[in-house]
Image: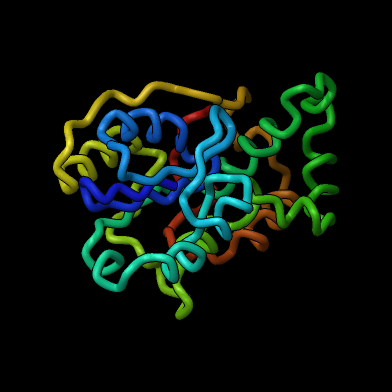
Length: 214
């Protein structure tokens, strides 16, 4: 998460949606009064003990909202990015198994079994994206939701909205795999669709939604 008091924006970092590339680009516009929380490539924490204790940078709307004034919440430009859940799930599983040379040989079996494990389902990298972006009424509480599938275009438009210069987003921390559709059979597709039902509905994705590989 980034909260920029200088430029009056809040960036919600949804896992596996190019958040590290976006952070790197946004960071050059921040000053000492701005807040950031992330831990994968460096340890920075929001000046809010309750949230700093989470030890990750994927803070949700419902977690940060009580710590901001009503005026700041209402006037700051709030944005994040989402990704096709079928693609994001494959990317997440490959990332979690990046040191497991045998994973791809039995990827479908692993992923089906993993979805039976509540601890896996509750991992921050795995949770449905909408849970990070909705308010207490179940509404997406952002001013703009960019698309991973059109990442640069979405980012350029957001930068124009918040009045900062855009930059070309590089690739950082990608998982490596073939096109996501190659890892699904009917059973796995149905189970992933069930788990991410709300994401598919809220963000208008389906299995065939075009998505790049990384």
